[in-house]
Image (cartoon, rainbow, N blue to C red; front, side, top):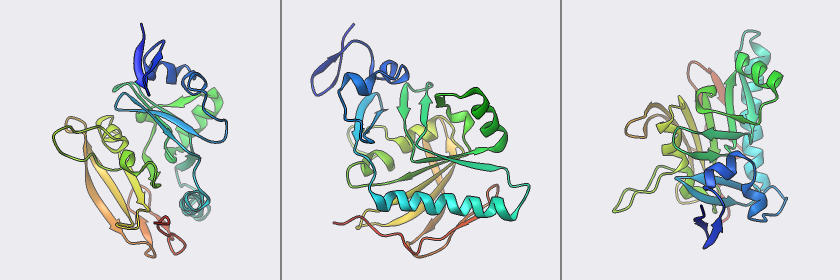
Length: 219
């Protein structure tokens, strides 16, 4: 069976099935330069490698978690960047910018040397927008045809918390979402911050993240 999924290209299988097998990027002949291929709402989405400023934001978030880990011997959370996330429940495959997992999950996945995580493995997912992918990271635009996004995919599969760092110069800021509604594929807003303010993630994390160096992307 062939499936039309990428610029009129006929694929030998569904985009999701090829993504799970690790064949999608190679089949599309994507460059090996950090370019990411994901399946969002059943459609193929290709994103360029992240820019330095975006990577710096992720480092700052990781540093906040590591600081709490250093100060609290019982701190249970571990941070991993750019891991494959298999949302088998909805037939999507994402590569989140960052995920936070419990230390027991971290130990288990390291021992098994797994290729992918699943939504039930996560406590928090982090996405940092860029000019090329922001529409896929945010809440869906409601209208005549609502297209799923990673935000709604995370909610539909029950990821407990979602931290969105939006670098759009028209609306820069940080939003923490929680209380996922799997039926409606929505989250509640638990906290909002402007760049320059300290992001304080509540229980169960109790982590503070500095954002003084965070800037919008160049318009």
